[in-house]
Amino acid sequence: MTQRIISAPIVTPETEHFWQAAQQGRFLLRRCTACHETHWYPRAICPFCLGDTVWQEHPGAGTIYSWTVMRREAAPFAMGYVALDDGPTMLADFTGIEFDRLKIGMRVKLAWSDTVNGAKMPSFTGG
Amino acid sequence: MTIKNRAYIMGAYEHPTRKAPDKSTAQLHAECARGALADAGLTKDDVDGYFCAGDAPGMGPLSMAEYMDLRLRHVDATDIGGSSYLMLVSHAAQAIAAGKCSVALITLAGRPRSEKPRAPNPMQPEAPWEWPYGIATLNAYALCAQRHMYEYGTTSEQLAWIKVAASHHAQHNPHAMLRDVVTVQDVLASPMVADPLHRMDCCVVSDGGGALIVTSPEVARSLKRPRVSVIGAGESVKHTMGGRVDLTYSAARVSGPIAFAEAGVTQADIQYASIYDSFTITVLMQLEDLGFCEKGQGGRFVADGNLISGVGRLPFNTDGGGLCNNHPANRGGITKIIEAVRQLRGEAHPAVQVPNCNLALAHGTGGLLGTRHGSATLILERQS
Ligand SMILES: [Zn+2]
Image (tube, rainbow over all chains, first blue to last red; front, top):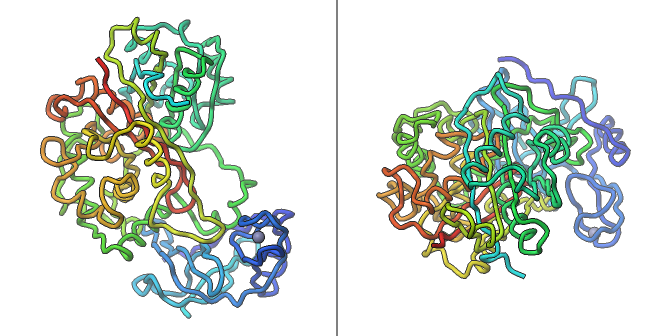
């Protein structure tokens, strides 16, 4: 099977710090200073109340909310939504889990994936 | 202000091509415009409002108005993907009701089989968090199907019935890309492309297009074609809600009730429905969210041929839909309206024509159901 290499993250001024922390293996969410909710994907402005937000580390554990496998690619891959513990639900890919083990409700944990330029993208693997 | 009975669909045209390597996208738009104007019995110089969306080449209404030398006093190019054209009928009706134009032209055309897709903008805010994972139309819808099965026990067999119904209709459409009648077993035997969706759960990819003419009541009365009144319309948008993701429903839950309330009719009154069918799961979720059945009961509702004209309770997509007929520019919104207009005029194929069809619904989902999407609902009535 062809090894799938994830394309490099797109870095913007709003999220540059996320990618710097990712290089050090730290997974960050944005939390609102007004309503204290965390959200995904990270924004400088809280989507729930338009308040200001700050970075906050998350342990990166959660459960699969939904999943699929793209079967017809040169390198078939699994991806889906992960509901983070006490946090938002985020899109990501699944690595190191046999496709036939994937199921909704499965425990998963963060596993950083290398990308084409050496930057790290959050992926999830079996918990 | 209501749009009810303030505007009429008087021209409709579906381009017969399904592959157009020798034409430009602008040319296809103009050919569709010419067809719809001829159908209405109007000329280009009657058009004073133009409506298009993201498939229009160049700078949308500016490029296309110049290409066709339209002299306009109203334009609208709001893009909510494949559902744009249902919404644009509503916007055209609003503009006509407000006196901003009296003959509105709406066009869609594209050549996904013949040209490379336009590169999406990497600066769109969600891009960094989705593109590296290989998000695509197919897997975004598959994620919805997977969750729907988990929550409600929906089965692949039930989804397959939607394709089976579409194929029963497509056999009568000489322009349809896929005219073979298929069975539930055929769908289940087709390759798994993105769990739990099989290849036959997916729509076709086609070049082509379509156009509509929406007019004021005064213009409509001067024309010879049957009058199709826009009596209700709703639109909405749904997305990942800051990470409070819920894949079990679509924005039809908002757009549908708005349209039904404006029209003053109920689901039981609808004799024919055009339902956007990018994938079988798209149809199933929209039928639930539009209130044709209870949430979670979509699988039971579509099974056993219930969507087949002359067989089931709710004839749908009698042209074969996106699953079998065409999906021009990867946007099926306009063909949904065109087939509803055919039904209300009594001009559908006799094998699929709903007898005395006076009330129809057309609904579209644009964008990705599993991330962010638009919904637009139209309720249309034949008036003699
Ligand atoms: Zn907030």
